[in-house]
Image 1 (cartoon, each protein chain N blue to C red):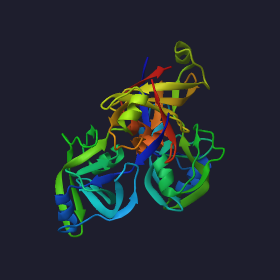
Image 2 (cartoon, each protein chain N blue to C red; image 1 turned 120 degrees about the vertical axis):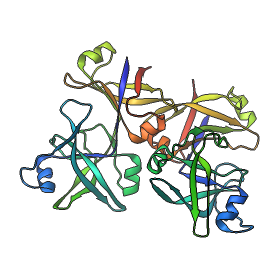
Image 3 (cartoon, rainbow over the protein chains, first blue to last red; image 1 turned 30 degrees about the horizontal axis):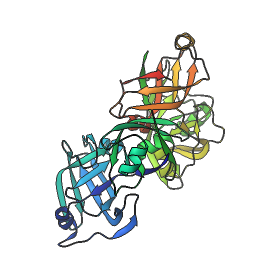
Length: 187
Length: 187
C-alpha cells in the first residue's frame, strides 16, 4: 500500500479559551484551506511565537480549536528559540515546554511546545489490512532522492482518520520528498 | 563498528581566486577550529549568500581553499533562497545552481550551490573491514530519539580520511541526533 505523505511546517492548535485571549471573545477561526485529516483546516490566522532567544512570525493556526493549546515545532525551530521541546505524539503535552504565543490584541503563555513524533494515520480497517493496530510503532520507507527508512512511527488508527504518513519539514527534507510523494510500510 | 557522526550546517568552500576576490590579494583564511577531516578547518571568515528570494548571513567558510568554490546548503536553505540546488556528492558541481557570495570588499557569482549527499568517510583499510569500498552506496542506521535508516549513503574511502558519517542539520534533526552520537552500517 502506497501511503500519501503529509508534511507539516510549524503550526499551532488553540484551545477555545486561548483562541479568545488572542483574537477576542467568541472568535471563530477562518478556514484558509482544508488539510489531510477530515474536518481539520489551516486557518487564515497567523501568530508569533516568542521565547528567550528570538521569535518566529507568521505561524499558521490549525483548526478547529481543541481541548488544549499545542505548538508543534521542528527541532531547528526549537533550537533557534531555545525551547527544549520534547518529541511527543500530538496531544501528549506532558513535559511540553513553555512558550509565548502573541498576536496584536493578546497573548498566551504556557507549556505548549512539542516536536511532533512522526505518525501514520489510518482507519481501523486500513490498519487491519496492514496487520497493524492503533498504538503500534512501525517503520516507513520513503522513496525520495534521499531514501530513508523512518523508524519509531506511531500508528494512529481511528475510523474518522484519512490515510496519511505525517512528518515534519526536516524529516521531509532529510528524505528529499515533497507533498504528493508516497511512503510504504516496511519491516 | 560504531561510527561517529559529523553534522554540517550550511558552509562555503572557496577557490583561492574567489577567496582573493572576497577578501583581498594573497588572503589566507584564519583557523577558527579544526573539524573532523584531517587538515580541514572551520575558518574565522563568514560570508553572506544571496539569491532571488533573500539572503543568509554569517555562513562559515571551511578551509583550506580548494580547486573550486562550492556552497553547501540544506534543502530548507535552498527553498528559502529559491535556489534549485541539486543533491550532489561534495566536489561534483555539475548542475550546481548559481548563487552570489558577498562580503564587504567583494563578491563572486557562479554555479556553486549544491545540497551535499550524505556520505561515509573512512580509510581504505576501514572500508575493507566493513566489506565496502570507495564509491559504494550503503545504508547507515542512526540511533536517535527518532531512529532512522539513511539509504543512499556514498562511501568515500581514502587513506587520509578520518572515519565519520557526514550528514546535514536537517538529516540530523530528522533522526533526533546531535554531535557526538554514532551510527552503524546496516543492510
